[in-house]
Amino acid sequence: MRIQLLIATLIFFSFILPFSGSGQKSSNDSILVITGATIFASPEAQPIKNGVILIRNGRIEKVGTTKLVTIPVNAKRLDVSGMVVAAGFWNCHVHFIEPWWRGADTLPVEHLEMHLKTMLTSHGFTHVFEVATFHFDDVLALRRRIESGEINGPAILTAGVPFTPPGGSPFYIAPLKLPELSSPEEAVKFVTAQIDSGADGIKLWSASPTGKGIAEMPLDIERGAVQTAHNRGKLVFAHPTLIDGVRIAVAGGVDILTHVAPDNRKPWGRGLLDSMLKQHMSLTPTLKLYKWELEKQNLYSPNDSMMNTAVIQLRDFSKAGGQVLFGTDVGYMSDTDPTEEFLFMAQAGLSFRRILESLTTAPAKRFGASAKTGKIAAGYDADLVILASDPTKDVKAFANVAFTIRKGRIIYSRK
Image 1 (cartoon, helix red, strand yellow):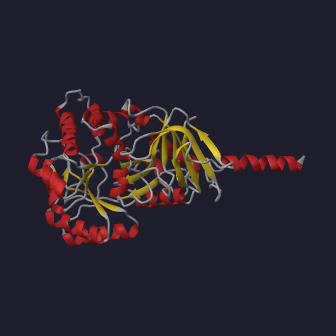
Image 2: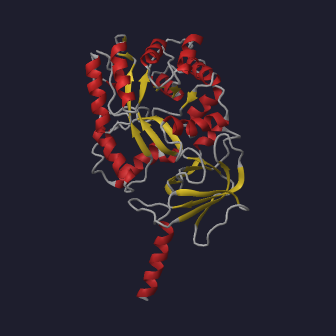
């Protein structure tokens, strides 16, 4: 009887470990096969109907039709017939600033996974870029615990603590203040310290709303920060606020705008747009943020001029061939549902494939990870999102997530 019980227990755990479980790692020889879905291997690829993805040890070994992929007899199967599989999504604008992340090095696994699920994994995000934090150590601790396999969560890149122009702490974080740098030398020292501490990028405000006006970043300070970051192989993000903030970001050599810049209700203008494209600047639009902010003040209407400007700026940037990176500002924005972001992107004229690109191949390329993630191909990490409905028919389906898989491990499953 004891032997039978032991055998049954071993069979149970040999099935469940490759799929999920807090603090549990997949077996080194684990094989997971996903069957039955329509597979979009990349934004450019034609869909594979009734496709098969063979995953071994967290990497994709084969992808194709049932005729082309032989399923090993010892494989664990996940039948997702009628669903859609794409590469795992990136959210390139998040924050871990809420109080429930404090003390992330010792908080219970269940606590952290619950908040990661609400904020990220239930929406298909296998990779995120955290573009500003107040408590850098907590973000680094959270990342360590995820990477160790102790916690189910996305890969985290972080820009650490951001900085502003002199007197430029934004009014909306009061009474908190950010570092306000007043010289190029301070910028060099600050950026060096951030990168040495583990930052994957640098974030600054090129134009910051203080509540009393707009504080603009002095160009010599910005250039000192950007050059130091670039010398270390790191990208620089800028919060632009308005068109002048974009001009300052372009002049200083910034790589990525963290938002569109609709505050003064002006389009980019052809000259500025050309400069952004010439510099290969990327854009994370965060369109839903503007609706959310207006709603907090009971000011939102479908024809609001700020909202319309935000949509037009994304439309013009995308039509001109600019690189769009998906992002929501979740963590600052308490509404975690990305559905409206997809709808606004479609309103701005982005096709299904263009939106999928912003979620997958574009960020993987921008952040130097395109050799291992961002598409579904042999040799790539098994970072996948499984959607319960078809986003080619309705972009809201991008938010209809049934499973999120990172390196072959299910980190979210809809119950």
